[in-house]
Image 1 (tube, rainbow, N blue to C red):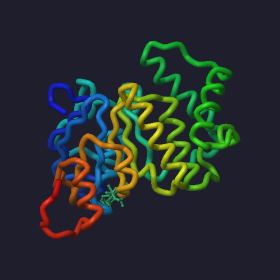
Image 2 (image 1 turned 180 degrees about the vertical axis):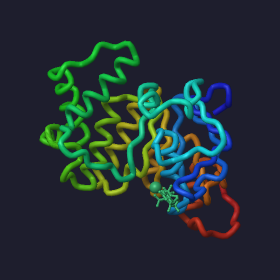
Image 3 (image 1 turned 135 degrees about the vertical axis):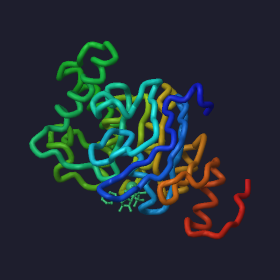
Length: 256
Ligand SMILES: Nc1ncnc2c1ncn2[C@@H]1O[C@H](COP(=O)(O)OP(=O)(O)OP(=O)(O)O)[C@@H](O)[C@H]1O
Ligand SMILES: [Mg+2]
């Protein structure tokens, strides 16, 4: 993860939400194809970091820099970020009433394809790809023709986020607690999709509280966020240490 090869580079990022200073100083590098796990106590700022990088309008960057594929990320609007290959799966995916899931995802995919100088997919070709991906992810095909997330169970919402990830094939995916609410098959679907996309060069920043998933993901780096700052950086041993001792733990040293 050297600076010169970073796909995402964040330097001293400070972020305010409402009148609350949530991120106080965050710096990180993510290389192409790398997998970084972000851990931290509830309220430490993990979702804030992910939403800020994706361009959510409620999150105000007060200082710092972020580049994505060499471009000034913070100067790009949310659509430009998505077209450049940044993807966020929400911790709590929202409903979009009245918008059919397949139209929503096809519209997003064709916007991304246009940015990559690829021809748009027509409804027939898209549906073929979407059905195959939905089947691999254990998402019933009927979910494709329902309004986005409306009436979906917690696990179905998360699988629907995975469906978008599988079809959009981003350069960098930020997955915010993708495993929460997932059954055991869903967790294995996460791991399989992450491995498949990583093999194609997608980089990941994955927020998770669960060691079992983190072990399966085989991360390149594990970061711990504490009160809006990166407090520790390590490898899988840091995740194991946190799982064993918690966040409000002693100064017990991390053992390899
Ligand atoms: N709109 C807001 N107004 C005020 N405070 C906010 C707002 N959004 C987030 N915060 C606060 O910012 C802090 C960080 O929230 P964030 O959602 O980023 O935490 P998190 O690390 O993702 O936690 P969790 O593990 O519970 O998902 C919290 O204290 C939260 O209450
Ligand atoms: Mg969160």
